[in-house]
Image 1 (cartoon, rainbow, N blue to C red):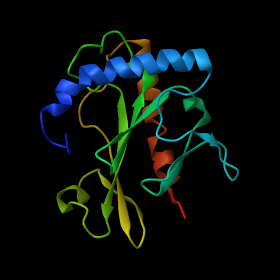
Image 2: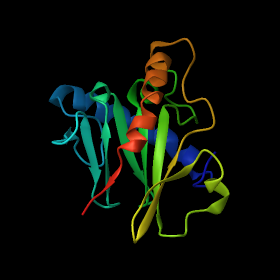
Image 3: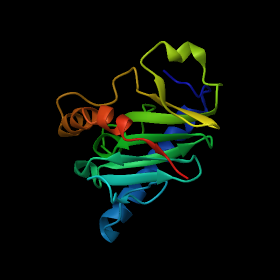
Image 4: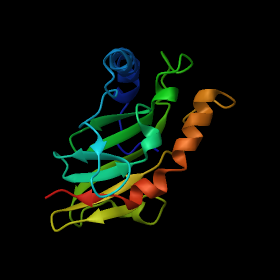
Length: 172
């Protein structure tokens, strides 16, 4: 399901994959995580990687097993997407029009304006503040190549999404 709309996503996907591949290669040299909206750091109150997006006003905790295995991409100023690097950067995905490796995305809406057609499906509000509602979405299509190590890693990471969802918190 593409909630963003438009065919521009397909045209940019090849360029995006190339940029992410370069970023991942550079990250491997520097020891830093691949492209992220903000740097993950250990959360003082829970075990895991604390991801915070000040621009959108939320944070969440990722499992430590995700370290250096994910990429976060901001889209349209209100959305962050979380990808499995093993699939996103795999040679079978480069040059395709598939946004492979998408694990989930979170979109911020002004309070009370989240699209009602999604509220009855698996997409749902996971955090509400006075100003904003945050909805989580999961892809409805296959995001990995079956019977590959990248596919196995992707499936393992999808098992963690419910716990990540429960860890979301507002930033002050």
